[in-house]
Image 1 (cartoon, rainbow, N blue to C red):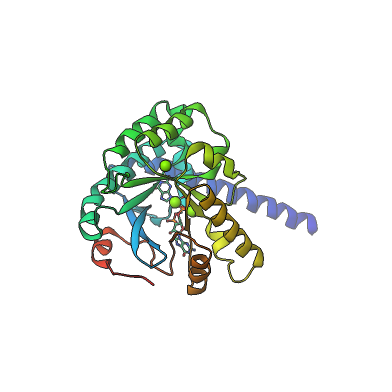
Image 2: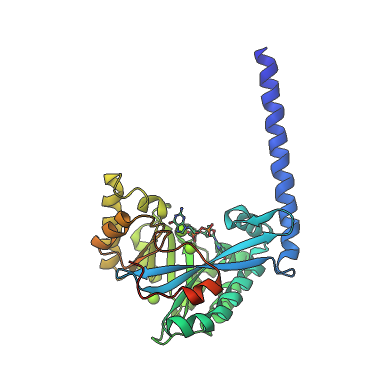
Length: 282
Ligand code: C2E
Ligand code: MG
Ligand code: MG
Ligand code: MG
């Protein structure tokens, strides 16, 4: 009997594996049409300062699949990276964010910035020159204060296996005044020494730490330490995934520069961004 159910488990496992493979193959095939058919769109999530004033947005992609419905980035970005389609998608994201910038500026002022997530593939060796192209594309938009209006968000994992073309791209960003944010900070193993080497402008504390604030003493210590070390290096800190007033207050108390999360606003479409403007979210 035990043998029988073991065999069933193996069979079930094989089916699940097969389903997952079919799903993946289908999605990669469907990605080819997605840009052409205008199935992607961007949502924008506000980022506020300690007074609750909106100073930045993060652009977040969504895929409205004709049959499968709405697909979140966690469900398709890794496939697009594997198949190389992330290059084309990444360009679309930047073009789209640039297009939105004019309207967003007219409501929020010249100094508003938009963070765009950039995949390591977009900067890597396999795509020679792409990182430099990206720097060119990004640099056409500068804000009132001399900084670029678009901020590149990369994950800290990128800095850990850095190839030459990625290094070139990061240097090009610096030369062109394009700011760089290190996303999901704390989930990898990067040391703050990397940050000094590559002139990172912002650290984004990963939401897993933010959400344990007030529950777990270790998270408090960690957030506090990240913020003070970042400041010692001249880097500003953005806390991700702030969901409660308590988390917001603790972070502000630690000197956190910017806050982002459902407590302030979920990611919203452009038309809502343009009517959303409030003086303060706290
Ligand atoms: P990320 O860059 O770390 O973005 C933050 C994610 O946290 C977003 O998920 C956002 O909706 C979610 N979030 C924001 N505030 C809260 C909160 O208070 N609570 C919780 N539970 N979640 C919150 P989303 O939009 O599903 O994006 C997931 C990831 O997909 C992003 O993580 C980013 O790595 C990637 N991604 C999104 N858009 C793009 C893109 O255009 N290009 C690339 N390459 N990756 C993208
Ligand atoms: Mg991000
Ligand atoms: Mg993140
Ligand atoms: Mg800089």
